[in-house]
Amino acid sequence: MIKVLATALFIMCLASVVMAQDPVKVDSKHYKVEFENSQVRVLRAKLEPHEKSVMHGHPNAVAIFVTDTNVKFTLADGTTQDVVRKAGEALWTPATTHLPENTTDQAFEVIVVELKQPTKKLTAAKSSHHTAGKKH
Image (cartoon, rainbow, N blue to C red; front, side):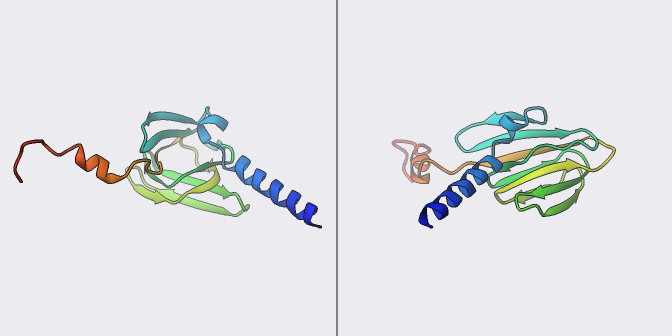
């Protein structure tokens, strides 16, 4: 029984890793890295009318819509969400795994600013802005 449970747990973990794959790696036709550093990765996603991407994941991010948008997102659990936004709108998006589908007759474009976990403490950054010899 324990062996069966361990195997099931392993398969579920493997499935979640596969489903949360990097969009640039699994769908380079639609996702391009515009900029990346230790704090953020900026992606540009473009879907032609009625095109679908593939299931992939994003960490916490901000989405900035370049075009008016009507997109259907299929989530990892199979549920769907319809998202309607106007060009120029920005939206906070918590970490997610999804498959986007452009449901319109117009091309869809969005900039996704993915947030990376900080690797250094803020105090190190503050100390680099201090000017030696200046009285405060």
